[in-house]
Length: 485
Image (tube, rainbow, N blue to C red; front, side):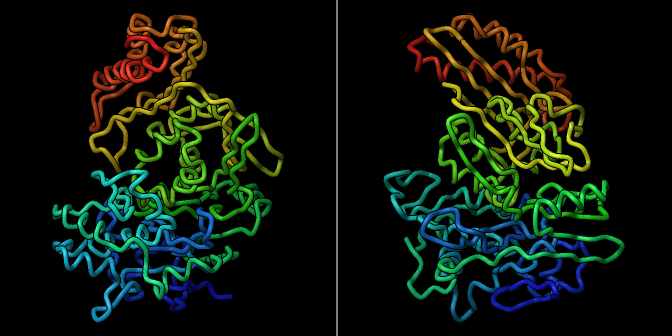
């Protein structure tokens, strides 16, 4: 069967695209030029479109999710449904989001407006958006009386300023879509099932296997295969560095990689779940991850990026590893040879190098229970959201009768790999959870890792921030143990 995508209700063929053609380029070449390329790395949001995804929230079958079309291969949309800005409304019959943006002056030069509109529309259709909005958030700076979460726009960086009219437009939207809204009604029907895809051109191939066994067979036969989930990392390599992998293997929809289960001993998170799916399914049950999620890139990226992908790159500046190191996470690595469980603290071996072999993939991430009493995730970056961290720190500390019984501290951005601050942990365990102990341990923490000078921060700044992070963590949590900070 010829690979096709249902775009704005019309089937469009993928027959002429290459495995490395992005969804954005394909859409624009198909005449849908509302989505734009601004940064080509998933940072500006000018390329935002909506895709139909399985609903996370009970009571719905499908959700409209906004993603960066500049990052994902067009082949990855085979068999799926996509809505672009052109599919939301017409000049004679504007969509509510388009109408509010026009009425309130939310469009400046217009280049980024279609991306804003698609991100806003996805939030407009989010199941349960208006339910209990006032009780949960009130009318604060980032949540409207209609339940609209401005974090939905954290990945849309307009270059013309004028954010207030955009916020006003978002907050003026109805609490719920009209009863005859076709896109809202679509949520009651199932999402299209993943289809087996094999697209070959220009000496390369894109393959979506039907099962985990098929995926493992492919990567066993082809050591040069590159696993693709949300494509938020490889998409940048394709666009900015001209990477052209000979084989892309899509694993984002494999059921074996998309579970989330919990028992008395551990929480098991499928490696192909997106950050947004994990955030909503955990619903705050892991406080350290609940702190991480809002600081991880943007909502657009979190709608595509997966935990397995973030770990699979082996990046020393990924935000998830410090938090997972503090949680004592373990990875399940699968291959045709079987499975093995690797502590995350033993996983990284060098700059973008790990113990994972070419024929292995990360199947799930396991978090042992019970969780630590006191946890925190601190990220130092130049921007509040949608930025790469200069330093990231995850803390997990247990205090009993005023004494530190266990401490785990994960660090990112201060060495060639994410790492545990083992010397600092040893300086804390067995000692009083007081200012004197913390000050001595903070001095140790400033010497952990091998921070470098780069365009994000100096090595002196990074070292200083490590120490300050521990002091801040103690000040925030000492009161819960009845100890003066």
